[in-house]
Amino acid sequence: MATTVIKQTRIMQTQPPFEVQQGVDIVIVDDVITKVGKGVAENIQADKVIDGRGKTVIPGNVCSHHHYYSGLSRGMLASAGPQTDFIQILKEWWWRIDRALDEEACYYSSLISSIDAIASGTTTCIDHHASPSYIAGSLDTIAKGMEEVGVRGATCYEVTDRNGGMKEVEAGIEENVRFAMAAKSSSLVRGMIGGHAPFTIPDAGLKLMSEAMTETGAGLHLHVAEDRYDVLHSHHMYNLDIVDRLEKFGLLTDNTLLVHGLWLNEAEVEKINAHGTFLAHNGRSNMNNNVGYFKQIQKVDNLVIGTDGCGGNMFEELKIAFFKHKDQGGSWWPADFVTAMSRGNQLVEKYFDGKYGKIAAGYKADLNICDYHAPTPLVADNAATHFVWGMSSNCVESVMVGGKLVMENHQFPGLDVQKIYDEAAKVAGRVWEKVNTIAP
Image (cartoon, rainbow, N blue to C red; front, side, top):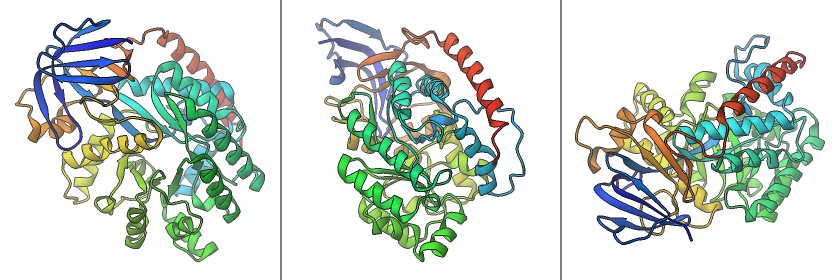
Protein backbone atom coordinates (compact mmCIF):
# COMPACT_ATOMS: atom_id res chain seq x y z
CA MET A 1 0.00 0.00 0.00
CA ALA A 2 1.12 3.53 -0.77
CA THR A 3 0.08 6.38 1.52
CA THR A 4 0.01 10.04 0.51
CA VAL A 5 -0.80 12.89 2.87
CA ILE A 6 -1.76 16.47 2.02
CA LYS A 7 -1.31 18.53 5.18
CA GLN A 8 -2.98 21.67 6.49
CA THR A 9 -4.78 22.66 3.33
CA ARG A 10 -8.07 24.23 2.34
CA ILE A 11 -10.59 21.98 0.63
CA MET A 12 -13.47 23.16 -1.54
CA GLN A 13 -16.20 20.77 -2.65
CA THR A 14 -17.58 21.33 -6.15
CA GLN A 15 -20.91 19.56 -5.82
CA PRO A 16 -23.80 20.27 -3.45
CA PRO A 17 -23.64 20.74 -0.60
CA PHE A 18 -20.77 23.10 -1.37
CA GLU A 19 -18.36 23.18 1.51
CA VAL A 20 -15.09 24.88 2.38
CA GLN A 21 -12.82 23.69 5.18
CA GLN A 22 -9.60 25.31 6.31
CA GLY A 23 -6.45 23.74 7.75
CA VAL A 24 -7.35 20.10 7.18
CA ASP A 25 -5.34 17.02 6.29
CA ILE A 26 -6.18 14.53 3.53
CA VAL A 27 -4.97 10.95 3.85
CA ILE A 28 -4.90 8.80 0.70
CA VAL A 29 -4.14 5.08 0.68
CA ASP A 30 -3.51 3.73 -2.80
CA ASP A 31 -6.33 5.30 -4.87
CA VAL A 32 -8.85 6.07 -2.12
CA ILE A 33 -9.21 8.94 0.35
CA THR A 34 -9.34 7.39 3.82
CA LYS A 35 -9.39 10.42 6.17
CA VAL A 36 -10.20 14.12 5.91
CA GLY A 37 -10.03 16.51 8.85
CA LYS A 38 -7.87 18.58 11.13
CA GLY A 39 -4.91 16.65 12.47
CA VAL A 40 -5.94 13.30 10.97
CA ALA A 41 -2.50 12.82 9.40
CA GLU A 42 -0.62 13.05 12.70
CA ASN A 43 1.52 9.99 13.43
CA ILE A 44 0.85 8.50 9.97
CA GLN A 45 3.91 7.15 8.20
CA ALA A 46 3.36 8.40 4.65
CA ASP A 47 5.25 7.58 1.50
CA LYS A 48 4.55 11.10 0.22
CA VAL A 49 3.80 14.26 2.21
CA ILE A 50 2.53 17.36 0.43
CA ASP A 51 2.53 20.73 2.15
CA GLY A 52 -0.96 22.06 1.53
CA ARG A 53 -0.56 25.39 3.31
CA GLY A 54 -1.78 28.23 1.09
CA LYS A 55 -3.29 25.75 -1.38
CA THR A 56 -6.88 24.87 -2.24
CA VAL A 57 -7.72 21.24 -3.02
CA ILE A 58 -10.77 20.55 -5.17
CA PRO A 59 -12.12 17.37 -6.79
CA GLY A 60 -10.85 16.78 -10.30
CA ASN A 61 -12.95 18.34 -13.07
CA VAL A 62 -14.85 16.15 -15.54
CA CYS A 63 -15.19 16.82 -19.27
CA SER A 64 -18.28 14.79 -20.13
CA HIS A 65 -17.92 15.07 -23.92
CA HIS A 66 -14.64 15.49 -25.79
CA HIS A 67 -13.31 14.73 -29.27
CA TYR A 68 -9.68 13.75 -28.91
CA TYR A 69 -9.45 13.43 -32.69
CA SER A 70 -9.60 17.23 -32.88
CA GLY A 71 -6.31 17.50 -31.00
CA LEU A 72 -4.23 18.17 -34.12
CA SER A 73 -6.70 20.61 -35.71
CA ARG A 74 -5.68 23.73 -33.79
CA GLY A 75 -4.77 26.45 -36.29
CA MET A 76 -5.09 24.02 -39.19
CA LEU A 77 -3.92 25.45 -42.49
CA ALA A 78 -6.11 23.77 -45.08
CA SER A 79 -8.25 24.95 -47.95
CA ALA A 80 -11.99 24.66 -47.46
CA GLY A 81 -15.10 25.67 -49.32
CA PRO A 82 -18.06 27.72 -48.02
CA GLN A 83 -19.22 26.94 -44.49
CA THR A 84 -22.51 28.79 -44.25
CA ASP A 85 -24.45 26.03 -42.49
CA PHE A 86 -23.71 23.16 -40.12
CA ILE A 87 -23.62 20.43 -42.76
CA GLN A 88 -21.08 22.42 -44.77
CA ILE A 89 -18.96 22.83 -41.62
CA LEU A 90 -18.99 19.06 -41.14
CA LYS A 91 -18.23 18.25 -44.77
CA GLU A 92 -15.62 20.94 -45.38
CA TRP A 93 -13.86 20.68 -42.04
CA TRP A 94 -14.44 17.89 -39.52
CA TRP A 95 -15.27 15.03 -41.87
CA ARG A 96 -12.11 15.74 -43.85
CA ILE A 97 -9.94 15.90 -40.73
CA ASP A 98 -11.15 12.60 -39.32
CA ARG A 99 -10.62 10.84 -42.69
CA ALA A 100 -6.99 12.02 -42.64
CA LEU A 101 -6.22 10.40 -39.29
CA ASP A 102 -4.08 7.27 -39.05
CA GLU A 103 -2.70 5.37 -36.05
CA GLU A 104 0.15 7.79 -35.39
CA ALA A 105 -2.12 10.82 -35.64
CA CYS A 106 -4.67 9.28 -33.26
CA TYR A 107 -1.90 8.47 -30.77
CA TYR A 108 -0.50 11.99 -30.69
CA SER A 109 -3.99 13.49 -30.59
CA SER A 110 -4.63 11.40 -27.50
CA LEU A 111 -1.34 12.31 -25.85
CA ILE A 112 -1.67 16.06 -26.27
CA SER A 113 -5.40 16.11 -25.47
CA SER A 114 -4.69 14.19 -22.27
CA ILE A 115 -1.79 16.45 -21.29
CA ASP A 116 -3.86 19.58 -21.95
CA ALA A 117 -6.70 18.16 -19.86
CA ILE A 118 -4.50 17.29 -16.88
CA ALA A 119 -2.66 20.61 -17.06
CA SER A 120 -6.02 22.40 -16.72
CA GLY A 121 -7.26 20.24 -13.84
CA THR A 122 -9.49 17.86 -15.80
CA THR A 123 -8.98 14.36 -14.41
CA THR A 124 -11.63 12.57 -16.50
CA CYS A 125 -12.43 12.92 -20.22
CA ILE A 126 -15.33 11.16 -21.94
CA ASP A 127 -14.08 10.85 -25.51
CA HIS A 128 -16.05 10.39 -28.74
CA HIS A 129 -13.71 9.18 -31.48
CA ALA A 130 -13.75 9.08 -35.30
CA SER A 131 -11.08 8.00 -37.81
CA PRO A 132 -12.82 6.34 -40.79
CA SER A 133 -9.51 5.36 -42.42
CA TYR A 134 -8.37 3.66 -39.21
CA ILE A 135 -11.25 2.03 -37.34
CA ALA A 136 -10.06 -1.36 -36.08
CA GLY A 137 -7.74 -0.81 -33.13
CA SER A 138 -8.28 2.96 -33.00
CA LEU A 139 -9.78 2.88 -29.51
CA ASP A 140 -6.73 1.03 -28.20
CA THR A 141 -4.62 3.85 -29.59
CA ILE A 142 -6.74 6.51 -27.87
CA ALA A 143 -6.62 4.55 -24.61
CA LYS A 144 -2.84 4.18 -24.88
CA GLY A 145 -2.39 7.95 -24.92
CA MET A 146 -4.76 8.41 -21.99
CA GLU A 147 -3.01 5.75 -19.92
CA GLU A 148 0.50 7.04 -20.63
CA VAL A 149 -0.47 10.51 -19.42
CA GLY A 150 -2.61 9.16 -16.57
CA VAL A 151 -5.97 10.76 -17.26
CA ARG A 152 -9.12 8.79 -16.44
CA GLY A 153 -11.46 8.36 -19.37
CA ALA A 154 -13.95 6.54 -21.50
CA THR A 155 -13.87 6.33 -25.26
CA CYS A 156 -15.95 4.91 -28.10
CA TYR A 157 -16.05 4.83 -31.89
CA GLU A 158 -18.43 7.17 -33.71
CA VAL A 159 -20.62 4.74 -35.71
CA THR A 160 -21.77 6.28 -38.99
CA ASP A 161 -22.66 5.37 -42.57
CA ARG A 162 -21.44 8.64 -44.07
CA ASN A 163 -18.41 7.16 -45.87
CA GLY A 164 -19.08 3.46 -46.47
CA GLY A 165 -22.71 2.62 -45.77
CA MET A 166 -23.54 -0.41 -43.61
CA LYS A 167 -20.03 -1.83 -43.99
CA GLU A 168 -18.69 1.22 -42.15
CA VAL A 169 -21.49 0.97 -39.56
CA GLU A 170 -20.60 -2.65 -38.84
CA ALA A 171 -16.88 -1.87 -38.57
CA GLY A 172 -17.57 0.88 -36.04
CA ILE A 173 -19.82 -1.34 -33.94
CA GLU A 174 -17.27 -4.16 -34.01
CA GLU A 175 -14.59 -1.78 -32.71
CA ASN A 176 -16.90 -0.49 -29.96
CA VAL A 177 -17.80 -3.98 -28.76
CA ARG A 178 -14.24 -5.29 -28.92
CA PHE A 179 -12.84 -2.38 -26.94
CA ALA A 180 -15.68 -2.16 -24.40
CA MET A 181 -15.26 -5.82 -23.53
CA ALA A 182 -11.45 -5.65 -23.35
CA ALA A 183 -11.47 -2.44 -21.28
CA LYS A 184 -13.65 -3.84 -18.48
CA SER A 185 -10.49 -4.69 -16.55
CA SER A 186 -8.79 -1.32 -17.10
CA SER A 187 -8.38 0.94 -14.08
CA LEU A 188 -8.21 4.11 -16.20
CA VAL A 189 -10.09 3.80 -19.51
CA ARG A 190 -13.46 2.17 -20.22
CA GLY A 191 -15.59 1.81 -23.34
CA MET A 192 -18.98 3.08 -24.46
CA ILE A 193 -21.00 2.43 -27.63
CA GLY A 194 -20.51 5.46 -29.84
CA GLY A 195 -22.54 6.91 -32.66
CA HIS A 196 -22.08 10.06 -34.73
CA ALA A 197 -25.64 11.42 -34.99
CA PRO A 198 -29.00 9.90 -35.91
CA PHE A 199 -28.97 11.47 -39.39
CA THR A 200 -25.94 9.33 -40.35
CA ILE A 201 -27.14 6.08 -38.74
CA PRO A 202 -29.89 4.00 -40.40
CA ASP A 203 -32.36 1.93 -38.39
CA ALA A 204 -30.31 -1.20 -39.08
CA GLY A 205 -27.37 0.56 -37.44
CA LEU A 206 -29.38 1.58 -34.37
CA LYS A 207 -30.52 -2.02 -33.99
CA LEU A 208 -26.92 -3.25 -34.04
CA MET A 209 -25.94 -0.57 -31.54
CA SER A 210 -28.72 -1.69 -29.22
CA GLU A 211 -27.44 -5.25 -29.44
CA ALA A 212 -23.91 -3.99 -28.71
CA MET A 213 -25.16 -2.20 -25.59
CA THR A 214 -26.82 -5.40 -24.37
CA GLU A 215 -23.70 -7.46 -25.06
CA THR A 216 -21.27 -5.09 -23.33
CA GLY A 217 -23.46 -3.48 -20.67
CA ALA A 218 -22.18 -0.09 -21.87
CA GLY A 219 -24.35 2.89 -22.66
CA LEU A 220 -24.62 4.90 -25.85
CA HIS A 221 -22.62 8.08 -26.57
CA LEU A 222 -24.39 9.98 -29.37
CA HIS A 223 -24.85 13.48 -30.78
CA VAL A 224 -28.52 14.47 -31.03
CA ALA A 225 -30.21 17.58 -32.43
CA GLU A 226 -27.01 19.61 -32.55
CA ASP A 227 -28.49 21.32 -35.58
CA ARG A 228 -32.09 21.61 -36.76
CA TYR A 229 -31.16 19.41 -39.74
CA ASP A 230 -30.97 16.35 -37.48
CA VAL A 231 -34.57 16.93 -36.39
CA LEU A 232 -35.86 17.52 -39.92
CA HIS A 233 -34.07 14.41 -41.18
CA SER A 234 -35.67 12.27 -38.48
CA HIS A 235 -39.12 13.59 -39.30
CA HIS A 236 -38.62 13.26 -43.05
CA MET A 237 -37.01 9.81 -43.13
CA TYR A 238 -38.61 8.11 -40.13
CA ASN A 239 -41.66 10.21 -39.21
CA LEU A 240 -40.42 10.25 -35.60
CA ASP A 241 -38.87 12.68 -33.15
CA ILE A 242 -35.21 11.78 -32.60
CA VAL A 243 -35.71 10.66 -29.01
CA ASP A 244 -38.69 8.49 -29.98
CA ARG A 245 -36.53 6.86 -32.63
CA LEU A 246 -33.82 6.13 -30.05
CA GLU A 247 -36.36 4.81 -27.56
CA LYS A 248 -37.77 2.49 -30.22
CA PHE A 249 -34.45 0.64 -30.21
CA GLY A 250 -33.95 0.69 -26.44
CA LEU A 251 -31.08 3.15 -26.58
CA LEU A 252 -32.18 5.41 -23.72
CA THR A 253 -30.59 4.01 -20.55
CA ASP A 254 -29.24 5.44 -17.32
CA ASN A 255 -25.65 5.02 -18.55
CA THR A 256 -26.31 6.57 -21.98
CA LEU A 257 -24.87 9.98 -22.83
CA LEU A 258 -26.60 12.16 -25.41
CA VAL A 259 -24.86 15.31 -26.58
CA HIS A 260 -26.06 18.83 -27.51
CA GLY A 261 -29.87 18.46 -27.76
CA LEU A 262 -30.38 22.06 -28.89
CA TRP A 263 -33.44 21.31 -31.01
CA LEU A 264 -35.18 18.69 -28.88
CA ASN A 265 -38.78 19.47 -27.93
CA GLU A 266 -40.18 19.46 -24.39
CA ALA A 267 -41.64 15.96 -24.71
CA GLU A 268 -38.24 14.63 -25.76
CA VAL A 269 -36.52 16.22 -22.77
CA GLU A 270 -39.16 14.72 -20.48
CA LYS A 271 -38.53 11.30 -22.04
CA ILE A 272 -34.77 11.64 -21.53
CA ASN A 273 -35.40 12.50 -17.89
CA ALA A 274 -37.76 9.55 -17.46
CA HIS A 275 -35.00 7.17 -18.59
CA GLY A 276 -32.34 8.80 -16.38
CA THR A 277 -30.24 9.47 -19.48
CA PHE A 278 -27.38 12.01 -19.35
CA LEU A 279 -27.16 14.96 -21.74
CA ALA A 280 -23.98 17.00 -22.29
CA HIS A 281 -24.13 20.75 -22.91
CA ASN A 282 -21.29 22.22 -25.00
CA GLY A 283 -21.87 25.95 -25.03
CA ARG A 284 -18.60 27.05 -26.62
CA SER A 285 -18.83 24.61 -29.54
CA ASN A 286 -22.46 25.55 -30.19
CA MET A 287 -21.45 29.20 -30.41
CA ASN A 288 -18.55 28.39 -32.75
CA ASN A 289 -20.78 26.39 -35.11
CA ASN A 290 -23.61 28.94 -34.93
CA VAL A 291 -26.19 26.20 -34.37
CA GLY A 292 -28.20 28.02 -31.72
CA TYR A 293 -28.60 27.87 -27.95
CA PHE A 294 -29.95 25.02 -25.84
CA LYS A 295 -32.86 26.89 -24.26
CA GLN A 296 -34.08 23.85 -22.29
CA ILE A 297 -30.82 23.48 -20.40
CA GLN A 298 -32.58 24.03 -17.07
CA LYS A 299 -35.11 21.26 -17.69
CA VAL A 300 -32.60 18.39 -18.07
CA ASP A 301 -32.25 16.35 -14.88
CA ASN A 302 -28.91 14.72 -15.70
CA LEU A 303 -27.24 17.65 -17.42
CA VAL A 304 -23.44 17.45 -17.65
CA ILE A 305 -20.87 19.70 -19.34
CA GLY A 306 -18.52 18.93 -22.21
CA THR A 307 -16.32 20.79 -24.68
CA ASP A 308 -17.13 18.91 -27.92
CA GLY A 309 -13.43 18.85 -28.74
CA CYS A 310 -12.69 22.48 -27.84
CA GLY A 311 -9.92 21.39 -25.49
CA GLY A 312 -10.23 19.93 -22.01
CA ASN A 313 -10.24 23.09 -19.89
CA MET A 314 -13.41 23.01 -17.79
CA PHE A 315 -12.66 26.27 -15.95
CA GLU A 316 -12.74 28.00 -19.32
CA GLU A 317 -15.76 26.04 -20.54
CA LEU A 318 -17.85 26.92 -17.47
CA LYS A 319 -17.08 30.62 -17.79
CA ILE A 320 -18.22 30.66 -21.40
CA ALA A 321 -21.27 28.48 -20.73
CA PHE A 322 -22.33 30.69 -17.82
CA PHE A 323 -21.93 33.98 -19.66
CA LYS A 324 -23.73 32.69 -22.75
CA HIS A 325 -26.57 31.47 -20.55
CA LYS A 326 -26.93 34.89 -18.94
CA ASP A 327 -26.74 36.51 -22.37
CA GLN A 328 -29.72 34.36 -23.37
CA GLY A 329 -31.70 35.53 -20.36
CA GLY A 330 -31.26 32.33 -18.34
CA SER A 331 -31.68 32.34 -14.58
CA TRP A 332 -28.94 29.89 -13.56
CA TRP A 333 -25.99 31.04 -11.47
CA PRO A 334 -22.42 29.71 -11.09
CA ALA A 335 -23.53 27.03 -8.61
CA ASP A 336 -25.83 25.49 -11.22
CA PHE A 337 -23.04 25.19 -13.78
CA VAL A 338 -20.46 23.88 -11.32
CA THR A 339 -23.05 21.33 -10.18
CA ALA A 340 -23.68 20.22 -13.78
CA MET A 341 -19.96 19.86 -14.45
CA SER A 342 -19.46 17.86 -11.25
CA ARG A 343 -22.48 15.68 -12.12
CA GLY A 344 -20.19 14.10 -14.68
CA ASN A 345 -18.89 12.05 -11.76
CA GLN A 346 -22.25 10.25 -11.65
CA LEU A 347 -21.60 9.16 -15.23
CA VAL A 348 -18.08 8.10 -14.26
CA GLU A 349 -19.55 5.93 -11.50
CA LYS A 350 -21.62 4.09 -14.11
CA TYR A 351 -18.39 2.79 -15.65
CA PHE A 352 -15.84 2.66 -12.82
CA ASP A 353 -16.02 1.08 -9.39
CA GLY A 354 -16.07 3.44 -6.43
CA LYS A 355 -17.31 6.93 -5.62
CA TYR A 356 -16.07 10.07 -7.37
CA GLY A 357 -16.33 13.83 -7.10
CA LYS A 358 -15.88 14.64 -3.40
CA ILE A 359 -13.02 15.09 -0.99
CA ALA A 360 -14.26 12.68 1.64
CA ALA A 361 -13.38 9.30 3.09
CA GLY A 362 -14.27 6.48 0.73
CA TYR A 363 -14.01 8.54 -2.47
CA LYS A 364 -11.44 7.97 -5.19
CA ALA A 365 -8.48 10.35 -5.04
CA ASP A 366 -8.95 12.31 -8.28
CA LEU A 367 -7.86 15.74 -7.05
CA ASN A 368 -6.52 19.15 -8.05
CA ILE A 369 -4.11 21.05 -5.81
CA CYS A 370 -4.57 24.70 -6.70
CA ASP A 371 -2.53 27.78 -5.93
CA TYR A 372 -5.58 30.02 -5.73
CA HIS A 373 -5.35 33.35 -3.91
CA ALA A 374 -8.85 34.43 -2.94
CA PRO A 375 -9.09 38.22 -2.60
CA THR A 376 -12.43 37.90 -0.79
CA PRO A 377 -13.77 35.38 1.75
CA LEU A 378 -14.08 31.87 0.26
CA VAL A 379 -16.93 30.06 2.00
CA ALA A 380 -19.56 27.46 1.16
CA ASP A 381 -22.10 30.02 -0.03
CA ASN A 382 -19.79 31.53 -2.66
CA ALA A 383 -17.49 28.61 -3.53
CA ALA A 384 -19.03 28.12 -6.99
CA THR A 385 -18.79 31.86 -7.69
CA HIS A 386 -15.08 31.74 -6.92
CA PHE A 387 -14.80 28.74 -9.29
CA VAL A 388 -16.42 30.57 -12.22
CA TRP A 389 -15.27 34.14 -11.62
CA GLY A 390 -11.89 33.68 -9.98
CA MET A 391 -10.31 30.29 -10.47
CA SER A 392 -8.74 29.20 -13.74
CA SER A 393 -6.46 26.53 -15.11
CA ASN A 394 -3.54 28.85 -14.31
CA CYS A 395 -3.94 28.06 -10.62
CA VAL A 396 -3.76 24.26 -11.06
CA GLU A 397 -0.39 23.30 -9.60
CA SER A 398 -0.61 19.53 -9.15
CA VAL A 399 -3.10 16.87 -10.25
CA MET A 400 -3.79 13.45 -8.79
CA VAL A 401 -5.68 10.66 -10.57
CA GLY A 402 -6.40 7.48 -8.65
CA GLY A 403 -4.00 8.53 -5.89
CA LYS A 404 -1.12 9.06 -8.32
CA LEU A 405 0.40 12.48 -8.95
CA VAL A 406 0.24 12.72 -12.73
CA MET A 407 1.27 16.37 -12.63
CA GLU A 408 3.35 17.78 -9.77
CA ASN A 409 4.29 21.45 -9.62
CA HIS A 410 3.31 21.79 -13.30
CA GLN A 411 5.62 18.94 -14.33
CA PHE A 412 4.61 15.54 -15.74
CA PRO A 413 6.72 12.81 -14.11
CA GLY A 414 8.13 10.40 -16.68
CA LEU A 415 6.95 12.37 -19.72
CA ASP A 416 9.05 14.51 -22.02
CA VAL A 417 6.24 16.94 -22.75
CA GLN A 418 8.26 19.18 -25.06
CA LYS A 419 9.32 16.21 -27.17
CA ILE A 420 5.69 15.02 -27.39
CA TYR A 421 4.51 18.43 -28.54
CA ASP A 422 7.34 18.79 -31.05
CA GLU A 423 6.50 15.42 -32.57
CA ALA A 424 2.76 16.19 -32.51
CA ALA A 425 3.41 19.34 -34.53
CA LYS A 426 5.20 17.28 -37.20
CA VAL A 427 2.34 14.78 -37.31
CA ALA A 428 -0.19 17.63 -37.49
CA GLY A 429 1.61 19.11 -40.49
CA ARG A 430 1.41 15.75 -42.26
CA VAL A 431 -2.31 15.44 -41.43
CA TRP A 432 -3.00 18.94 -42.74
CA GLU A 433 -1.31 18.11 -46.04
CA LYS A 434 -3.48 15.02 -46.33
CA VAL A 435 -6.65 17.00 -45.56
CA ASN A 436 -5.90 19.15 -48.60
CA THR A 437 -6.07 16.04 -50.80
CA ILE A 438 -9.47 14.93 -49.46
CA ALA A 439 -12.58 16.18 -51.21
CA PRO A 440 -15.65 17.05 -49.08
